[in-house]
Image 1 (cartoon, rainbow, N blue to C red):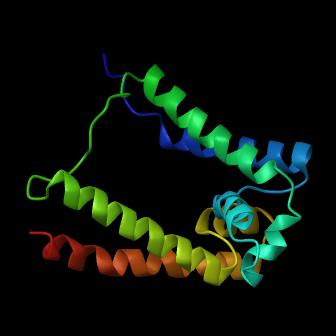
Image 2: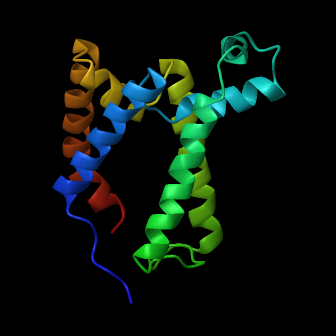
Amino acid sequence: MTRPYSNPYAAGAAIGVVLLASFAFAGRGVGASGAFAWAAARVAPVSPYFQRYLAADVWLVVEIAGVILGAFLSAFLAGRLRRDVERGPRISIRARIATAFAGGAAMGIGAALAHGCTSGLALTGGALMSVGSWAFMFAMFAVALALAPLMRWAWR
C-alpha cells in the first residue's frame, strides 16, 4: 500500500532541523558534492582541484551515506520501494538512464566549477544568511520559472 507524500511544510521543517543538528554536532552545514569530490580525491589525488579534499575528514561520506540510507528507508516505509525506471511514455529505459547520467555529470561539473553544490549553497549558505547564496537562490528559481513553459513545450 502506497502512502501519500509527506506534507511539504513538515518536510521543509525537518530539513531545517537536520541542518541545525549538522551545525550543532559536526560544526558544518550540509551539501552533496563534497562527498563525491572526497572519493575522487582518493582515485585522482594528483588533480589540483581534488587535492584540497585529501585532508577532508570522512564527515562528507557519512553525510551522503545517511542520505542514501534515509532515502531507501523513506521509500520502504511509504511503500514506494521498487525496482523500476521512472520515465515518460516516449523515452526508452536506456535513453532515460543515459540522460539522467548526462544531467548528473553536468551538475557535478557545475558543482566543481562553483566549488560546491546547489544544496550546500542554498541550505547552508542561506542558513548563514550569505548574500551570495540568497542571490543565487532567487536567480535559480527565476530562471526555472522562466524556462518551465519552454521545457513543457519542448517535450510535447
